[in-house]
Length: 380
Ligand code: SF4
Image (cartoon, rainbow, N blue to C red; front, side):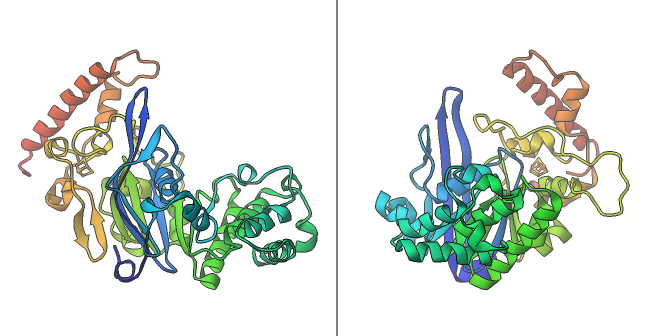
């Protein structure tokens, strides 16, 4: 957490647990997340699909529906109010007016049978504005987000606009009541690269103009570098690293963050294939014992299976959930991640009929070899 966030947190989340009670077991999608966002700050929340980013966002707005629930003991404080203790009426007053969301796919966020002007105006009307005032605000907002001929465009339907314009409309809807916090969930993923850059620029401009805080959810560290001042990396339902954007790009500590950075395409680098992180995020119904990134990590050793890593302090405002903080010398001895070793042995072959027990046994066997091979290198 930076000094700024500590001094004036607009949003403060402590120990957030959001679980889904499914037939396949309890999915611990968000498992003890704490984070702060200061007034006027843009924070990037980064990770692959299935890491818990979007469930964190939905939990903030109390939009989790059965079979999911935010567990007792989770704390979400926004503008000094305990969100967990609010009734439906108070929550409705906050949603849209004080906290707004921008979703990934504008076509699903907009209603195809109403004009875009009506949809923006509706937000104003729900929160008490008159019909005339709401329409005037809608046209004003279309101007603010850079839509040409706003009076005419306001009378058009979503299908009459391009993808980039539709996303501008969604941003206009989010900002029309001047909220304190905008949660933007992959706002540029569905757009092509040039439009993506324009939308990021627009978000940055609006953030500066209105002083809105932004929680930017993305799997793309490039998007974070362009827009945010601080970044929180999630993996396996937990925060695994947090730092300023500058610090993270210079001195990423967690091997998962390292993997995400290595997977970014570099300008001027001629490569046939981009780097990837081997394996996939494990299912939230069965987080592995110890470190949840262990199977995919090139540095894992026996301690990583035995002990669930806490968030270690790496420097000012920089934390990492990795035992390398205490045993940095192990970084000098990378090995093939367990998932790759099992794949080499045919364990994770496509179409494999192996049961969970077989896979767990293989994992344990490979893990034992990784742990024991380290011992021979004299680095413990
Ligand atoms: Fe890798 Fe171990 Fe760090 Fe987890 S704790 S990220 S397995 S080195």
